[in-house]
Length: 234
Image (cartoon, rainbow, N blue to C red):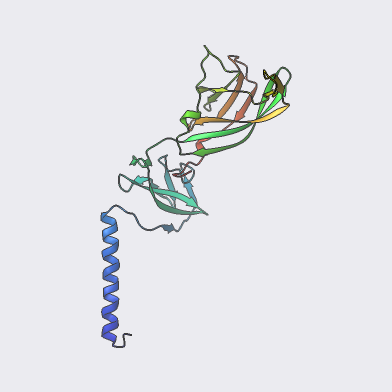
């Protein structure tokens, strides 16, 4: 136990020195430390709508603009709003950081309910989730030469087409018997839930569903991808 005041003072100095040395070492190694809670007067807005690590954004708080930036080539300095305050975090980007965002792509999984509608189907929106994992094998482009039963088309706010994707019905299943040879029966369901995977595009505002190469949509869904959040590890 330290009883001498000078020993206590020396101990405090040693602790402070060691803490400074550790912080300095971590900084040189490119390991960021710390979070900040900034006082706000007049609210907080975020141009990329949250902790969107793959999208460059600017937070405006108290009349001051705070831009997302690359702390190092591997770490992103991400600004965001939380409960009316500006906060920031350091995020390690799996593929590196460039121009104020993590390098990489995000994908959207859209869940739809397909319902029987006369001789065709109609579609209603259920939910949408994002992922930073590589979902490209699940994204199927639509080709008019070999059309799928349905077509999903993304459009911007001016209703200009941005992409066309295959969509297969989930209302039909094949039931086979255990006879020899097996006998199959096509069963039509009244409704089913299907998932559609798309590349995340911040310009998308609508999702139209068509039958084959038809130009008249079966269903038109409002889908604002600009406000979807995609983070590292999502």
